[in-house]
Image 1 (tube, rainbow, N blue to C red):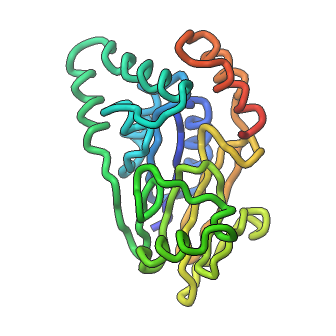
Image 2: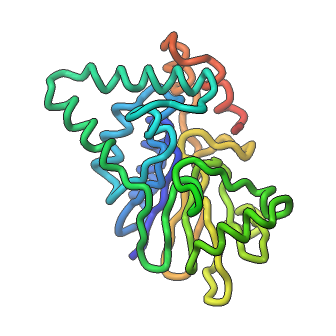
Length: 251
């Protein structure tokens, strides 16, 4: 199946809409989400509605967990955004909407497998909240070894908002080094991060996602209306303006 993989939307409706519009031109069979639908951004309810309608399934990211349960070990901006997001789900019109949203969020899974892929938000070792950074390939050999030992063949992760491919050499290849395409190999384990739809952190402000088609993983970057998102964030006192300003810089 031709599968679009999105991750780390972070309540950014404009980025999500632009991404889904582009996916609709790519003749995919399904869309999956690696988690963090919520957090930071100004449109949590709308993003959950879209993901629940358009994605075959979504994982639970650490910010989804923080909204549903408790935002532990979050910085001030993330914590305030989590509590504000929770309030938005408590105030739709009608109790049926409240129940529907909480039911969807509370049933988000921690791990899903398809084909030769294990899918987690963080890492196979700590699936909700462990970061796998590009520099870990060079600086953390024990961490890389332990994580790859938990991967049978291929793995999809999010969480860092940095797109690219880890191989079991170990090494990390950003999409530009791959000309935007990674070929899956029988002789090589790989961990693939599609990057972030709603809050990229690789100094490129464009939304990021991938499509998996057979043995080909193709990376896409998309422009979206950042000004509109920033204006929404500035209109919400509980969301720090910095959460919008960082979107311009992709950090």
